[in-house]
Length: 413
Image 1 (cartoon, rainbow, N blue to C red):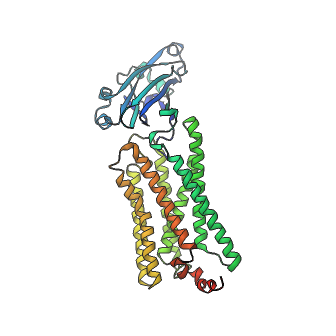
Image 2 (cartoon, helix red, strand yellow):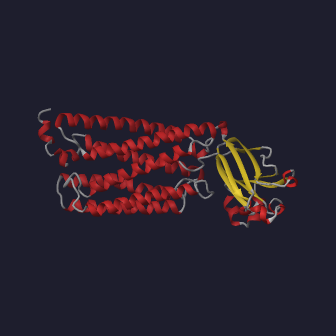
Image 3 (cartoon, rainbow, N blue to C red):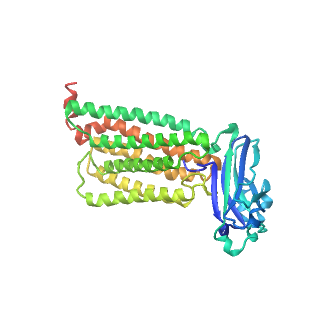
């Protein structure tokens, strides 16, 4: 969950890099009173004369309804659209300015608010000589609390409770599948590779969501969370997603149905590594500007459309495999291929569909749509695969390589 992940924002600018107008952060405010605290400081002034002075910076606050118009204007013409403005005096002695505390109130519905600073009259930057710019830093510290003094932005409300439910479901499925593997091995001395890969996928997903819950718990106290936990959660989630994708793709080409080893594995392996590389690259790029004003969720913009393109490519490859296996099969296998096509198809196209739906959804809801949607569909796919691999009445139990003698064993049970 990347949007508004740190509502205690700390930013540092080189003085020479400051523009006339700088976007700071955004925050989704629920109906009611929201408070924010902001302070600034200048680091690096050496002369006693400058250290004893104070320098002005203009703080501006914009509402989402006017935000598109704000971006269309020249930087020094934007202040007229600000809902709130405040000139704050920043001391030159390296200490933070006095904390400016403000509040905003939504009466009808939730809104996104955008925080910015401006120095259009250059009352800050023109006070320093050229050689001083290389040394000076301008630092910002913002702490925002939503209605009820919670650290969470409105788009994050309820996500943690939803994830608790998902983690519990994953733990139950993990325990069930693990128990099934052990009992089957003890009774028949057989090992289902497909089910084992699904258990790995489940384990990775459980770890990912569990670590993220821990991050959110810390976040609820300090407004920042633990970056390392968040990074680990996302990386493990990518691994889980990759594992699930590979299971679906391999099944579509007849793995565990018509064969157990790929004849052209030297082609399949590079393709798998390429998919993994793209997924990790997308995650990495998403981290670079996760709090940008144009991003309402982690896959906003071109990153999300690139991810959608990759999912569509995987879907095409998945369908191609299904078609190839369907033509070589008959009866129960064809019925299974059709079911797998429906289940897997929903999984692969869910991301592009959610990305498209978010084009018409209110900005403060987009994060929830993407997060709850993708997590729900991924968990549903794992649930369906669990049923396929463990149910005695499922078609897969009748047609898979692991279960060719399954009907004979049933006679003894």
